[in-house]
Amino acid sequence: MKISASIYARRDAPLKDIVRELDEHGIDMYHVDCNDDPKVFEDIQQIRQFGDKLVDLHIISAQPERYFPLLEKTPVEYLTFQYEKLTQPLIIPETITGKLGLAITSDTDIEVFEDYKDRFDFILIMATTPGQSGGHFNKINFKKVRAFAQRFPDKKIHVDGGVNAEISFILRNMGVSSVVSGSYLFRSDYLGAAMLNLKGDQFESVCRVKDFMLSNGETPILQTEQMTFLDVLQTIEQYKLGFVLIANANMNLAGMITNADIRRALIKNISQLNNIPVKEMINTQPFSISEEATVNEMLGSIKAQKFPINYAPVVNENNQIQGAVTFFNLIKGE
Picture (cartoon, rainbow, N blue to C red):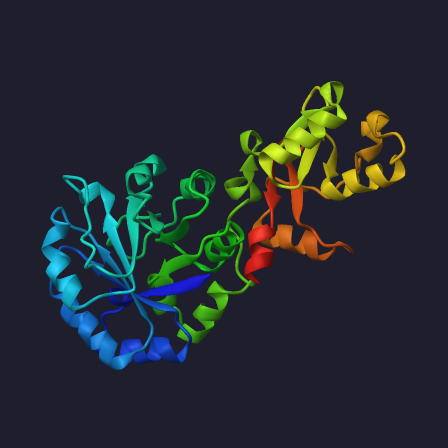
């Protein structure tokens, strides 16, 4: 996951020094907020002189077309427009280069991206107030990230606002490709340590598993009374997660069936495929996680296992299924 440093989150040093310090500590992009101020293009020109990383420009304006000539003269690699500020459909000239993104606030539905999906490359989810530094991450955006990834699987997701080390870890696990960080980077005692924290797994944990897990509606679940071999196959295929949770009538976790369990059952019953006993496939003691566990507690439990964990059921204190967590994106990214 790329880290885009919000340049204007720091005001106590010349732009030249800020850019060079960021470069020294391995920043991926410079994030520039344009709150309807054309003068930011003068800063972008200076940034080009001092640093060699990608420029990530966020235009917050009701008249974005006024910036088209400036963008043609001073192109950027990533260009985002704030949806809520638009008063008419946004049409970008072919002369504007770089990857295009649509920024939305926590209150805006991801469906607004539908009108831009043919030309735009990514969405920027604003987890705090756009253009303001130092806000707290709104946890409702975890669900928004999941919903966008499912609705537009070929598009990238960027997140801006309230990203600290723990939020960064969770977003990496969810497949987010880039986060914007300002206050967290520049208010740290040492910028280099803050950068390592944003890309690592050591942090003070505040979030709970229930804040970012797949909900029951997003998790493949079958009840033991209704289950057939065909049901198992169709459910795993429908959700494309590689597993299905098994619940009893009270939604208590009765076990889990994975692709590996199906493979073992097929090998064992290869001569009688039409009579494969489904209940024999169930792992009745799967690794699970409490919905109240912190991220650090979750990681500690996973590290204590003798086998790799790709996904896990999430349960409440009564062992009832609340959802699931998966780690495919984290493994892929690391």
